[in-house]
Length: 384
Image (cartoon, rainbow, N blue to C red):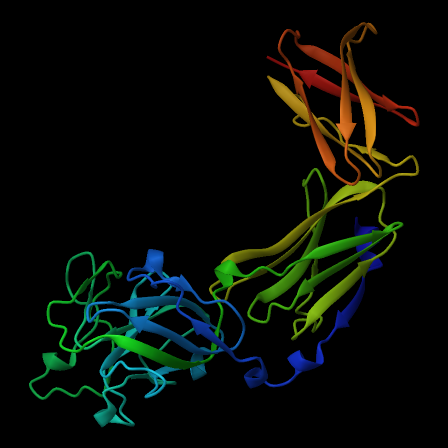
C-alpha cells in the first residue's frame, strides 16, 4: 500500500470556465415545491457560488427556509431585491445548521422605505465561521419561536423607539421549533434573495468519483469540492483494516475543475478508494467512494475469511476479471469434504460467499476455491 502511494502521480485537469472568478460560476437556485418552515424540512441549496435564491411565499403566513453553506463568512450577506418579486414587506433570518438564531433584519438600512430586508456583511451578529447555516424569509411580522415558545431574536418593537433597520441578534439560546404568525400584516408573493459568500449545502455534495483500471494502474477522477477543508484521497484493501491517505488540498489541488489522479504499480487486491474531507465546523465528509479489483495473473482475487475466528458465520470475497463459475468446497482437517457449492462470478464485481457454521463443531476448517484456471485455499475457525 505505501509503495503504491509512493508512486502517486497527481494530474489536475482544469476547466477554463472554472478557473475564472467566482461570479463566472454564479448560480440561481429556485425553491422546489414549498421549502420547509423548520430545520428538518429546510430545502438544501446545492451548487457552487450561489448568487440568488428565488421562490414564493404562497400565503401571508408562509415561511421558507433554505439550508446553505457559507464559505466566506466575513463577506456573507443576503438581501431581498425589489425585482423580480412581489413580496412588499419581507424579513430575513439566519440560523445555524441546527436552527439556533444568528441574526435577522426587517428593513434594509440602505433603503428603509422599500420594506425589503438585508442581512449585512461583517456585522458583529453575523456568522463567525464558515459552515452550514439556514437562511429564512417571511413577510412582516412573523416571529420565530423556540421550544419554550419564546421568541428567538430581539424585535424592533421591543424598544419604545423602534428601529426596523437594525440587525437583530439572538434573544434566546433555544433552537427554532415554530413560528408565531398571529401578527402577520402583509401578503405573500414571489421573492428573490441575493446572497454572497454562499455555496451549496455540503451535506448533499457528491464528487462523482470514478475509477478506470489499465493493467496495474488506476485513474481516479472527481469533481472539484471548493468548500471542503483538508481534502484527501484514501486507499485500502477490501478488508478495510487500515486506510492510507494522501492530502490533496495541501498539495494545492483543490481548485475549480475536475481532478484526476493516477496510481501506478498496485499489487493484486480488491481496493476501495474514497475522497474525504471536513466541513468548516470539523464534521467529516465522504464525498465519493469506488471499489476496484486489481486481479492477479490468473485473474482472480480471494479474500481471507472474516471474521476469523467466528462463532456462527463468516464470509469471504471472491472476484474475477471475467465472468466465471468457481467451486467452493469445505473440508475438515482430516480431508473429509463437508460441503460443496458452485458460485457464479460477474466480471470486476465482488461476490460475498457466506460460511454458515450450522452443524459444524468448533475447530479449524479448510475452504478450497477452484476453477479451470484457479485453485486457492483459505482457513476458517469456528469457536463457541
